Amino acid sequence: MLSFNRTRNQPRANRSMSLGGMDYADPKKKSSYVGKILMAGALTALCILMLRQSTSFSTPSAGFAFLECCTDDSISRIWGTMIISFKEKFSRREAGVTHVLVTGGAGYIGSHAALRLLKDSHRVTIVDNLSRGNLGAIKVLQELFPEPGRLQFIYADLGDPKAVNKIFSENAFDAVIHFAAVAYVGESTLDPLKYYHNITSNTLVVLEAMAVHGVKTLIYSSTCATYGEPEKMPITEETPQIPINPYGKAKKMAEDIILDFHKNSKMAVMILRYFNVIGSDPEGRLGEAPRAELREHGRISGACFDAARGITPGLKVRGRSVKEFVEACKKATGATIKVEFLPRRPGDYAEVFSDPSKILRDLNWTAKYMNLQDSLQVAWRWQKSHVYGYGPAPATTA
Ligand SMILES: NC(=O)c1ccc[n+]([C@@H]2O[C@H](COP(=O)([O-])OP(=O)(O)OC[C@H]3O[C@@H](n4cnc5c(N)ncnc54)[C@H](O)[C@@H]3O)[C@@H](O)[C@H]2O)c1
Image (spheres, rainbow, N blue to C red):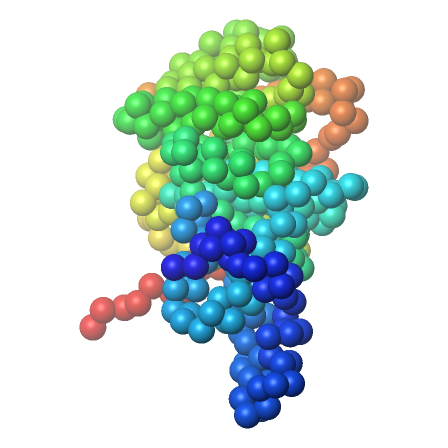
């Protein structure tokens, strides 16, 4: 296997070789001149192809293992040079360029955030273990931003501190937006340890890596579930956080860890608590595509779309506060949806809604897409054109 070390250990003349390839222009070797030009042409085409792909997928430890097939040393050297220059874009700071690590960037909110960051000319590294996200979303982003140094995807699990540390040592991040998490209230009551591990413990891993590698900005994705069932509505930042399910508790613990660390460090931290997120990219490139096996834990918009498409026989609704949502969803999909009212699941709240004045005051930010039905309509458009999410239709068995 070709490793970076081996490539770096080549004599200097070989290391600095560019794709133009002095290796192929030695006048003393006329006999193989034509053959080598042909090989250079073929390599150029292959390099372009592989570079396009290499922006989309690597692993922290065994990236570019496909180079094992190359036996000709000159081929290896060219590849090595190209990969180093590609990786350098991410491993070195560049004036005027902010390099953002987006954890969970293959997921619903993370992929939309990555799109926005890339549109705003930032450099983005996505780390995701694809346990819940979609490689299809990464491919969409990669096709929109194919230039080297814009987007790289690293397939890794944040529960692996060694892998995380390696990622931080090989990349010069300016900021981290931490989205990666398991995020279903119902599932958290059935499998609490998974939630404490994936949310609380993994956040600690990310935070420690940031501290060790001097990354000074963190934006953390938290949730309204940290508030539990407050006595007073709407919820503000002053509302006491008393979570009632393991998902909310795990997120609250992660928040506390971040805030405690922040007190005696120079790290700038921001915690954003999302309430139920709906909608999708208005241009129809990205959407929400959770795994089919998570359907039973699903969110209300997903459940409504499943019912509208006939995947589930109807919509099982818990709590009165979702009635308005269901009406908007019926209108957005235009489908006749059978609705069944059930008692609340363990861990569910009766109502949660927020007063977002602080974010307007402090950051001058306000939600742009406020109309429930319009947002559902946009999401429904994506759902209709992506019946199988980002993937192809499942193969039918005879
Ligand atoms: N969607 C909402 O309504 C909502 C509401 C409140 C908070 N949030 C928070 O926002 C964040 C994103 O939510 P989402 O709806 O996009 O979820 P999502 O499931 O679509 O995305 C989460 C991503 O994290 C990845 N991931 C999970 N565990 C990982 C690990 N150990 N290592 C690497 N990658 C891992 C998954 O593969 C997935 O791509 C989560 O932290 C969630 O708690 C979401």
